[in-house]
Image (cartoon, rainbow, N blue to C red; front, side, top):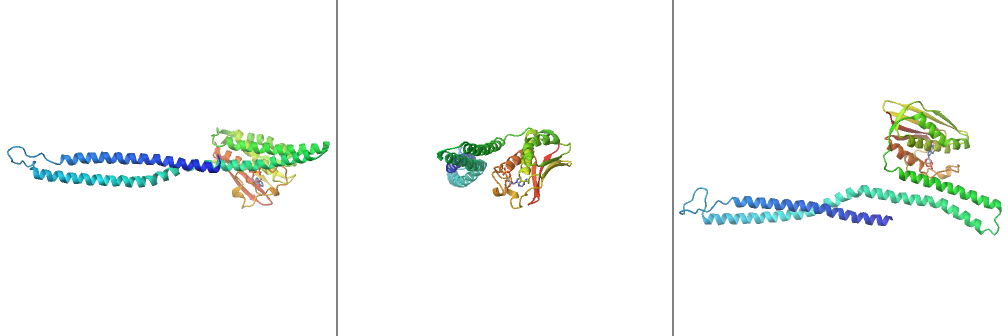
Length: 339
Ligand code: ADP
């Protein structure tokens, strides 16, 4: 749904919901007024004692016709005044109810509006990111096609370039799918041995580390935490992948753990380029990359890794903490509740 359509839909939904709330308020107000009026009417009618009937004498509880018609007149006046007040009260209720209904319907629809805005933003960002490799593939192919003679070497170069762009597209669509699928499904949590999960995550990045001749030291102790094995392995792999990506070749990445009465901590330390303090608040945002030109590596990513990791750790009731020293490296810490 386009942004304009989204807002049109929300406007009409707010209007309809406000009308429903107002109808409920007015039904209650008018219903209450009718009951109140009828009860008062009944009570006032009971105030007139019966007219004296026998021999013209009055008992203490009986009045003559003059007094009776006077009382009846007072009662009619009272009834009229009550009716006017109730009508005014309902007019007031209509005004106040309209304001309250609008406010309540805005409040009710706010989370839906936010979700729709986030979705629109997500689709916009995603298509923007998809455009870059797609444009590159198109340009490479068009240049190749325009050449009158394409020798084997040129053709191989085109295929290589296309393959690299397709890999980027694949990584991007994988990341987008992961983000979309992780949205609201609660994870199954159970006690997991951190050493096992770390070993699994290290398997996923071993080729990347070897390609840069980077040593990964595993110093994680034999402790258990409450989490989801597969998701935690994914998070550690994302953080290790970054630690390797943003380190110079032949560097060392170190994994360590700590535990206290409530939480277990896994630290992933690198001695890479680090992150400026001004960038730290944003690195978990989707598609945020500190500075593309700083990354000399081919696999510079799409700024999705940390937002996926953050979401997964959140679903495990934990959090990711980060400290960094630009030019000297970073420490990413996964904090999880223990069993
Ligand atoms: P990307 O795929 O670009 O790495 P991430 O979401 O994983 O996306 O990270 C967001 C940004 O945070 C990165 O582009 C990078 O600038 C910064 N970053 C993440 N991890 C590190 C790290 N270990 N060292 C330096 N910068 C990092």
